[in-house]
Image: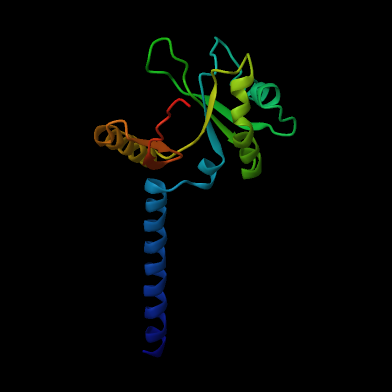
Length: 164
């Protein structure tokens, strides 16, 4: 009987722990970024060609367009475009968060480059976050009457630009 009294609480505690961890995994999959998603970026408008090596194109973009010699992408995969005449987005993964940060800091330099001015780099967001952002954008556009804008994920009043 003493043995039974000792094992039942341990068994119940382990069952509760396993249930909590499985529920936490579900929540992270649905709402949060996994560690791998945190070090990914999206590249838009990267020209597409038959038999291309996407990883080499991305590394050339990082080296020539962003002027980062010490940063290399670990993987790069192009998704299929659903619109005719549009390039599919490229999902790029980096080895560390530090490398991603360097790329995100330098991405504004692409607009000054003749070869890469139409290419855009963005954070990789989860599907739920993309849906929330899109809904927020629609709400702001519907009620804003050109007085509200979204800047950096925040809603603010639009600055009126009057000539001097």
